[in-house]
Image 1: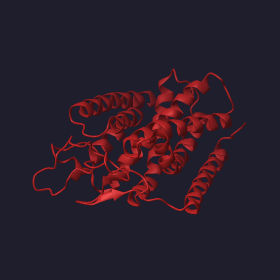
Image 2: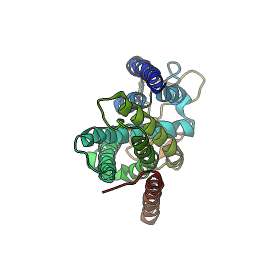
Image 3: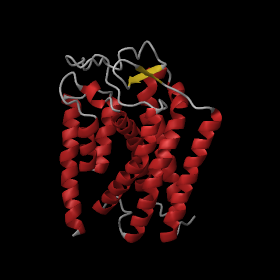
Image 4: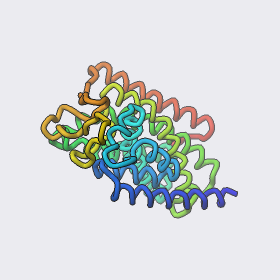
Length: 285
């Protein structure tokens, strides 16, 4: 029964990825990083990723992308995709490599977290925001808070799922088997679900970017009264994305104390998730 479910899942995943890839080339009006994020997320989450791509990102018709994606919850989903794509890519790469070292699962978790953080921050977050901030290091500095908070929520969902399923599902740690990829897909879906509320909050409070249409790639649709959010990005680096009809969203910043509290709180949440997982499966170093 499980083999049949995996077969259906992988078939649906293949169709989903092909559609998102084709649509990104023929109908995409966002940056290459945004498109790559959606392609990777769909690769990892199959039809679930396709569903949310259609729901929150795909341009419905020429000139309609800004209007279609302006709702904050859709901006939050698109913002989360950078984090999920980067984090999951790093975690999966680490999990593949670690399988051949046969380390205790505690060390696996630490290495996977490190790979996910580096991939999410230094590739999918910093590169995405490079045009806005002008320099790579500035983009890293400006996005490290949001990435840390978002990453910790993703891992809060992924870690218990990965660890518990690995114990209940012998052989699913081997990347040469379909079981491994199905287990990682399930873990990525859980991580994305857990991380959505905080990404919505970050975008709603202008602490993280949302969905960004390329300048001139999709003109405003007639009578919508909604201009492109990216028109002045290159000349106004302090501004980003549009959340309303005519208002450019300015990036805000929390105080050092507030950011510290958030980061510490998310690490505490991650530790609690590890403790919960350890009640079912021993975590050893």
